[in-house]
Length: 198
Image 1 (cartoon, helix red, strand yellow):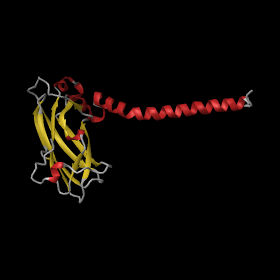
Image 2 (cartoon, one colour):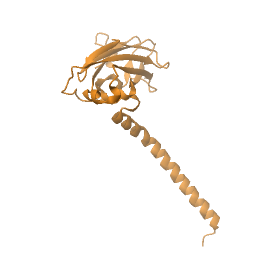
Image 3 (cartoon, one colour):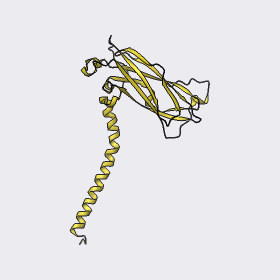
Image 4 (cartoon, one colour):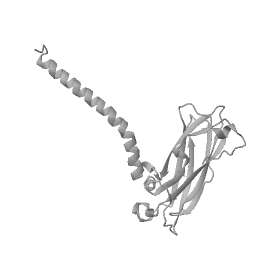
């Protein structure tokens, strides 16, 4: 026979249930990040841009201006600037823009970029085909690179009443240092090689 009193059994049951809830909450927390990223990607929430394999077949006669913004977190010893202030493009047209980054520090540093567009409602219509923000970038001391962004604005933007007054979309990037030890890149080991990021 069990020597446990009824109150002890109840306390043990509550403790097991509480432990199960805590473990479940940890699992939900880990799942929340990718689910939130998927939600932002699908809805354009918070100015999150879209990814596309190709530009749409339809190109409108209407134009929109895309402005470019660049920021660097204080943890990163880089210069980071857009190569052009803005571009006026036809809606639906695939366009190429560039940013330039340079490592002013005395050691190799790896950076990664976060990005968004404003107004935030335009995120669902702004699609990038190629972008340096999808990979980590390692720069050697004194190395500079041109970073391309291939993008388009979806023609569906003209059918959204909330976007009727939008004439300019601003694409903004912020680079942060990656905590891991950076790996020496092959292009930096040979100064004759082109430093452009593909």
